Every structure is written in structure tokens, then in C-alpha cells.
Image (cartoon, rainbow, N blue to C red; front, side, top):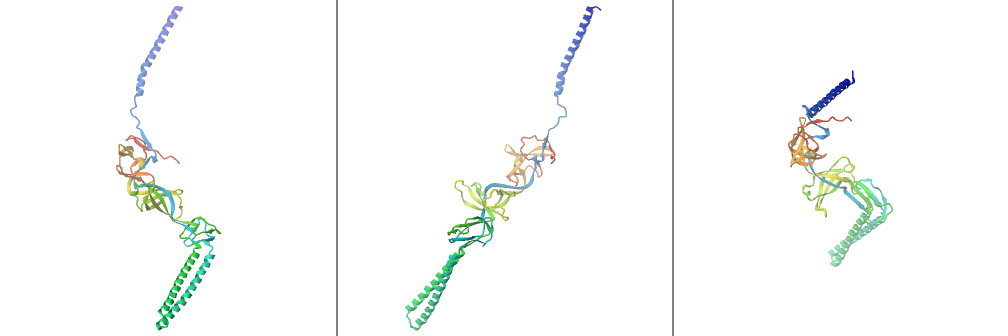
Length: 384
């Protein structure tokens, strides 16, 4: 076969291959938009979104107690306390107690040197005996002079002198008796006793010290009852009355305590214009101490058996209140009418007057705008 014929056949097959390649590229280009278009069409069975909540994200509307509270704070102090001072000057012989010791009413706490006061007492007793002797003599003289006067043996002036001596002797007896009482009291004042049951909070003297009258010896406090002094703004004082309940939390104690308003100061405090109230707290176990700081809430109003929700669950839109509730497994926006706001004992809460039934499940916190009708699912509790 000659060479020209071979060249013609080779050129023919090259041309055929080029045509086939061009046809394939064209077909691919023509098919591509159809595939892209079909990929952009959503499937007929589109998946519905589901909201998943933890158990702590929901709260159940339940009837309970609601309190409107006024916050207070202050330090505790003993309702009954006494600073024991020396009533007479002298040397301290014994101090029988120390700080922190419990004392009973009438218990001897301090003894002072009583030698001088014992001597003065004996002197007063002697003076009283002498005065009584003089009184007896004067009484006999007066009676004798009375008999002589009746018989006409002495003048009326002589009897009057005897009667005057009797009266002077009587006055001397009274004076000596009073001096004896003073001496007895002074001797008794050398012994210092506890005025009531309590605890010694401070001791200012030691045995051997010489003290003057009114020198401070000991401080005794009764911790059975304490009180907290707290300032109330003048705008709120009209809502405060004696006997109102107060709940206190004291540093160092896990459980809250209950007290009551005992007194209200009649005047405002200079500068702050606030008014002091005094909250009394019983402390039978003596677990509280004077000086402890307490935070308290005064109950201004209380309602029982009302439908209560956390304040965080209620949202406002244009002045209207609403909550997100779970109904038949879906989210529902429920308009509600609220009442008194306060505390349910654990958190800030609000009364639901209308719009919810007891037992309704409500989203606890504000999660923003949610879509009503969305299916809701409760997430399973995580394993411990």
C-alpha cells in the first residue's frame, strides 16, 4: 500500500475522534444545568425543627406562698446587757469569773476588801446601841416628870425640857439606825453579783487592783434574746408595724432565723433621713453572738395558696406579660395576668392571677423570642 493512501486513512480517523470528543463535551455541558437545578429543589419530606430542653429549663406552676419583702441589714446585739461597776472604792480581792463563762442570777463575781467596811458597820452598830440607851433614859425621865407635873411638884417648863430631851434621843436613834443601814449596804457592795443569767463578755480588773467607785469591773450579756438595729427608708416606714415577721440570715449559720419587729424609733436619723427599727430574735440555744452581721427581709405582705412562677419566667411585650408553656409536646406563648411580686422563699417570684392552670410546664428563663408551635423534647438526664 502506498504512503499517500495511509496518510488519508490516518487523517480520517483523527477527524472522527475529534468529532466524538466534541460531541461528548457538548452533551456534558447541556446536562450540567439540569443536575444543578435538580439539586436545588428541596425534598418533599422536609424535617421539622425540635427544641430540646433540660429538666432544669422548665418549671411547674404550683400554688404556694408569696411574700413581698423589704431588705434590711445590721448587727446583732444583746437585748439585755450590763456593765458591772464598783459601788464603793477599795482593793479587789477576788475575781471569780473570766470571759466566756456562764453566770446565774445572784452569783458572786467579784469580792473586794471588806475590812474597813466591816469596821464601819461595827461602829454604826455601837452608835445605835448608845443612842437606844440614851433614848431609854430620856423616856424614863419624861415619864417621871409627867407624874410630877400632874402632882404639881414641877412646872410645865421643866416637863417640856424632859420631853424635848426624849425627842432628841429618839432622833438620835433614827439617825444611828440610818447610819447602820448605810454601813451595811456599803459592806454588801464589796461583793458584786450577777444581775441576771448570762455570759461574761469582758473583764477589766485583776485581784490586787485598787479601784474607785464607778470603776468598770465586768460586762455580762444575756444571749437568750438578741435584737438587730436596721435602717428603713422613710418611704417604706408606713408599711412597717410592730409584730411583723422578719427572716434573717446570719453569717456562719446555714439555716435562716425568724424574728419580729419589736420597736420603731419615733424620729428619723440625721443625714440619712431613715428610721431605725429594732428586730427581736429569740436565741434559746445561744448559737448567736452579739456583733454578728445579719441580712434580713421584712415581710410587708403575704399571700398563701396563690399560683406562683419565678420572675425570670415572665416576659413583657408592649406592656403585656406572657410565658412560654409546653402544651401537647409543643411550645405555646400564653398571655398571663400577674399580681403581687415578691419571693417564694427560694427566689424572686410573681403571682399568676390568670392565664395558666396549676401544673402547667413553663420555660424557666428568658431564652429570647421562640417560635410557638415548635415541637419540644425533654433531654434525658445525664448519667452520674
